[in-house]
Length: 325
Image (cartoon, rainbow, N blue to C red; front, side):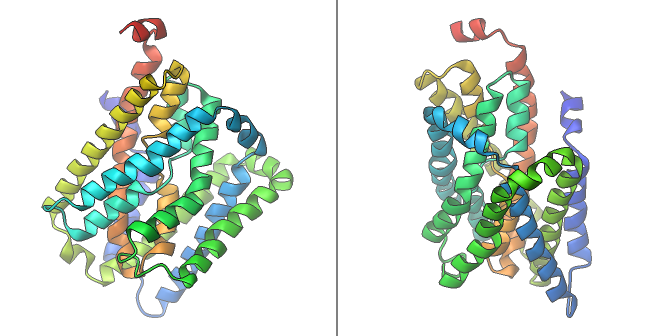
């Protein structure tokens, strides 16, 4: 068990922690701020361009057939999670900034890579997981900003036409352009998955550095106490446990096949750091992005650890015995 948990401390997680430390010690100041912000904006555009290029139309059409499963995943992601996020924000012992961050976390789409990987380990329906996670991310481009505007209007400083224009230019248009160019660049991306992954993660780290650097300049660590971080972690654990239980019980109530139930479990219980980082940079003022992203980073690691413990157990169990139980 401990080896499995240790294996999740991959280079990206270490790089993410190092980036937060670097931004805390050496944040961008003065003339470097426009340069870092410009590079972060370019990273967001590139990130969503690659997301669009990786989404195949075959997956879209194939996924449309299993509509009950995909609607269940979307309901968990954009209905149950937001309700939990609203409840978390209302907790009286939680700092206001963390409450806003937890609600933002609850409004994000599901992950793609880890959802598919854990579904495969648990011997679930991998094709359905690809479709469900892809649909969630595509819907998130529209649904997440809309929910943020509806539920967090004050935290974002209001949702203006300028905000909508930024979302279209930095998120939607690059995604659509990447998808439309897939017939020409899809093969190249498939052959260079390792490099595409590095560019993907590098863009996230750049945005994290810009966000945390701006927050540190505004006094982030003077406002966040160690006890508050511990409380945040515990709240994230409770949210994760509730959603994991809800997804599995919902699958049983819907009488989904075991392979599809596993898809709902893993795709419906996750939140995407890859989408959350750039979206936060677009939707929130620069000074508040860093503290809003703290719950996203904490939850991201907790969900990986929990699913790394669950997936192998599901993969080893006899489906007939599990059904009888």
